[in-house]
Length: 488
Length: 62
Image 1 (cartoon, rainbow over the protein chains, first blue to last red):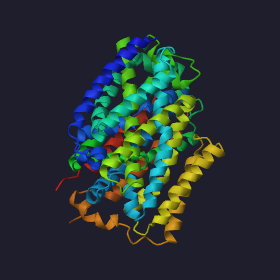
Image 2: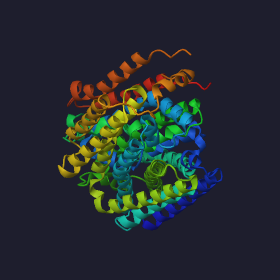
Image 3: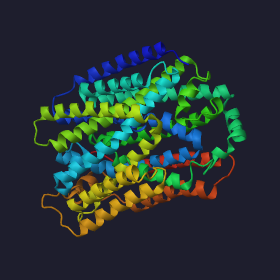
């Protein structure tokens, strides 16, 4: 076990450093809502890329994905790489999101959808869906922090204390300076995440006897986990159930799609994507390898979500490296949590209070940040055991905005009624199937039904209704801009 | 202003790649002992990077 005092000391140093970075970021703020939520649309490629990566690659990776690897084997790598392949959507949608936001001044993805369809109710529906379905994802981050800190200290740091710590860090860094402090602290946290993970995996593999021994031992003792379907978790059904919603992550999750609004120019956008690709592939391979290492160094775990704390306290990882990795996972969770909280704050401020003064919108956003973090923390304390299911439910639920988002840029005939029907109908189905009928998120019927119904409603209702007079023509109006920046 | 060509073939490559990402491990390599599936998915990840870089590299600011 690691001493609680050591962990607290490390967290205190980390918090101070993060507070300094956030304070420096504050000095550039100008007081407008655009500045608070989007950093004045002037963020460069490296910071944006590391921020995007840190927001995406959360505590999910080294807690949940590692646990899924431990339980089911190599299928976890394939699932995560299908999400990775979904980043190809950025080639199509990143220029469109950025150009649309620049031209019309959008601050949130929901606002963009509302303006496209000429309906404030579309914006509100998208914001509400984000609020509802990102909450489980926030809870995953809190639960991840809780499992980790209480796990490595043998309960000396209680679940409550761990969750409260994560909540406090996320809240302070977000409230300080909005997107600027979130992006800069994200960038620092991404470096901590990757460096600590590389060091930790190096020591874990060394404890097993090196890479050759690791490969040999895995073949000898875990051969069934090296293929799919493996010992059972990664059946084709489960793979489809999890991969399908996650493929659309880049355009369905507003905390990352909003990152497309913050960029300075197309060169920054390209650089951001390249950084995300490099970070993403490396971190994915590390998280899965870590899971296999845990099978060797901490075998026989009943709760596979505790694979990381068990590995960190197995004796294979030197205490300083273990502490650094703990900070890395804490950083991953906090960066995701504060990005989500800020995006939800922006959505409430812009889509629910669009006529308010900028100062009021910022204040409202700050209140939402606090409430989101508080609620996620409280829920995490109740439901920490089902952390993987909560993350999967989040992805499946957020898929309901995908038809309206794709159609916004490619189908002029699409209507506000169609968008509303697909978002509302799809969301209602997701909630009914998962919460009332108890359909598991590992059952592809959930994702396929939600996705299928959303698409069907979007198309059918659009065909029997008319576009609103105030709807924007993204396809027509952005065509010249897209050609100018040489995007498809 | 002239539109950039090649989107159709690029999209087709993405579709084939994503399909292969599921079909190969669950079809051709199902239950195969050894590091084949891991190696395939590692190469798949690299292929994804190549495809995305190809799509984004022509972007410019004017």
